[in-house]
Length: 266
Image (cartoon, rainbow, N blue to C red):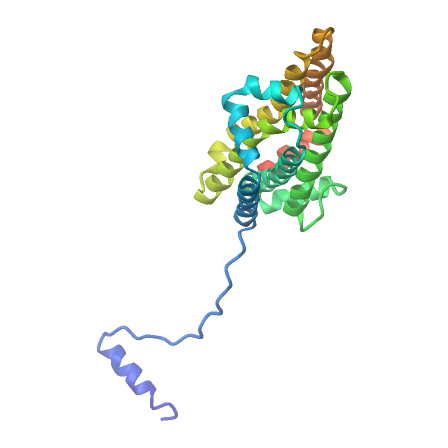
């Protein structure tokens, strides 16, 4: 008697009909920003702008990969003098490396695992902002290693009288890593990145590793003497240091155990 509208509902129920029950409308949630895709898009836009406004840059890319010997000769004889394209490529590679760290952690490590990492490495990761911390760490690592690599090759080779020679020899192979990181981001969006993560990580590391060795060996070929010695103190010593770093990480419990623990957490 107090709710006559219920008569309609009861009548519908007795007739065996479905009874729609009105519920409050759910609040619509705005879509989350996909930072990795957005940042990747911005990086490729920067690449296209660089390519558009510096025609020599596009020519140099094709020459490096398709006519490598003549490219190296032009660099060492200082016919290619501009340092700006190489500096831009190194800056872009540092940003791609940060994105690689970000997406790699997003694929392999759960939120609980990231919290565990920030607990074990409080000086490296900010609690609650682990992915951002890894992104910034990747940029810092890339800039530091790139600076050391350039200084190492430049100082050890007397034929390199201009820094542009070192930058141009070292930076061009790193373009391959632009494609590797792009594949990683795309596969992550498709949900199949875990299968490819190890392979792409190994390729990324090898490309970066070989960019130093190839640049050092190409520069050593133009020395009048001590070519072998130059290769030993650059590419040879570089290889030894990389092996020692990998060995140290694997056999240092304070580093490897927290990493394994973070990877294992659901």
